[in-house]
Image 1 (cartoon, rainbow, N blue to C red):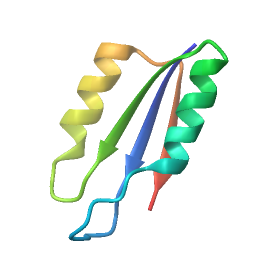
Image 2: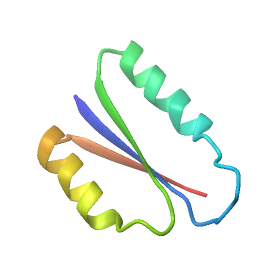
Image 3: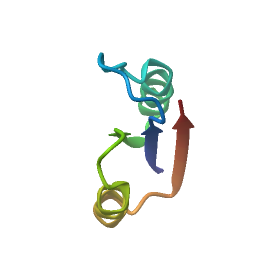
Image 4: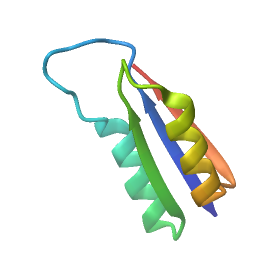
Length: 68
């Protein structure tokens, strides 16, 4: 199964925070044999083009979203 995981940041912080929880989900999915792409969307960048390109490239069977 192809999985696209999106990390959506709603906070504007001077220090970037890694999406650790979503990274753990990605690692578990990979260990289970799935193809995983993790896309970290940061505030101030247009997400539609990034998400659209990732969906077109990966053609995922499932999409997971983490909002913080």
